[in-house]
Image (cartoon, rainbow, N blue to C red):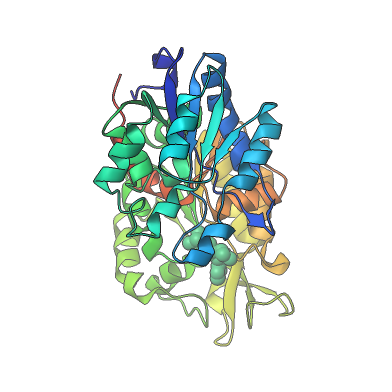
Length: 394
Ligand code: AMP
């Protein structure tokens, strides 16, 4: 078990918390402040336990001088201050005297936000390349390091792995929740355990399939990736997405796990991926040469539902159709509807699946919706994430 923020006496300590404030900002206005809200529990715990809080986060990518102004965390400091109901000191640099003086002036319960850690990428990718000197410098600013940025935990950056290798460390409440839910679902599931996999390419999910095929009772395949599996079964798939390099992998999986991997029996097709294209529902043996499959259809929804209704643990990664287009969103929406009614642990992976569930109004309907796309995918692959591996065990 990893050490958590609860394992430290924070009183009067300078506590560096790596948060994920990588929020969408348009014309200086934050369009979705969920990530800021998700970090409040850890920040509030630290301030109410007497810590002097120093927050680090990245925002977008910084490659050119122009990216600097576009990616400042200043609007985040303003919003954070509103949400916390207290002043947040914003320091518009990532190192130097102004930052050090402000930190030395912090009092118990104060909160300071450092400028975007990726400002350090402009000069030789110091943050993203986990520059040794930078990690050691940031570590020198605090007494304790807490990682609570799940979205970047699958990367070894100076602001997570770098700092943690120089300071006493632990995880915050957000990462703790992610680990508890994802880890338990995969490694100690209440059975039956069913996985829904979708999304565009099989090749992106090979690691997940390999890891989960031995752990899950069933894997339901939808999305663009279903067509590579169907091709491997010998079906004509028209213009549907085909990941030709993965056909052999799919064949192997279908041969080795014939009763575990469940493929769709019908789909919704169209001539092109637009809202104007007329959708046609068909059984999978009748996809026309000029059509592409863009969603699962009624019989598959029924088939998948029969497995899901029996399940006690469900993990879902990847939408089962091109859900961004209303004509091809039905499969994903219907599964979202069903999962919200089930008496089961329902874990939604981050990224597109999380956006779909939240857009359909199900933000609070499931056991857990992961906040990290790449990070949740790597956990499902059974990998240890560097930002978490570096954290001390209890
Ligand atoms: P991923 O990032 O691999 O999880 O893929 C998510 C993307 O897959 C979304 O943008 C979906 O629109 C897309 N997608 C899902 N099903 C299909 C499909 N049948 N054909 C094309 N794209 C799809």
